[in-house]
Image (cartoon, rainbow, N blue to C red):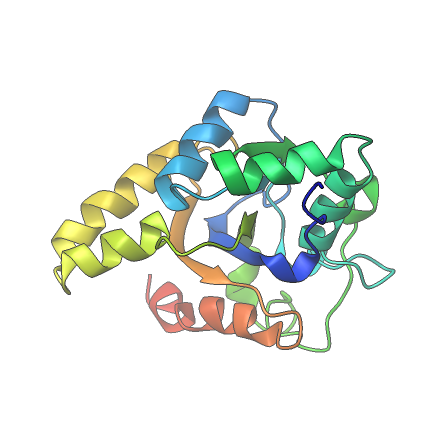
Length: 205
């Protein structure tokens, strides 16, 4: 008897976030996605999305998140049982292209990233790189590196620079990665807070 197809609750929605001049960029470099996934997520099956986004592109007009859309694309495949099974058993990773509906900006109730409210974000434009990750007992690579650094900013900075370089295939210079987080669909404003935390530093540039 085959294992039941996992639901979206068997996955966690993660993201890298940073600043750029062009947040919505696509790439077909599967090797690049694989290397970045290994560096950030590690030994977990999951899905990378072949695009970076502005935060206000992460939820389309129908209220669907880019992470749910990635899950739905795999679920729609005739061999979905094998695909999802390989994620759990072999830590398989896949890359999907986002539907065209995510190319459009849709305002959130939290408008703090708009240029009207915070002009600095029209120069340093926020971007997000999503990952949909199958839940498992092993720590994420990002978390393991953070723990290993034991508060040593220089040591973790070396790892962060490696992540930055690995992301250049989809977000080339002058883009740079600031950090990593988990997207909570019930509290999307937490993602906004990530960028607001660096606002003062940006204004002092």
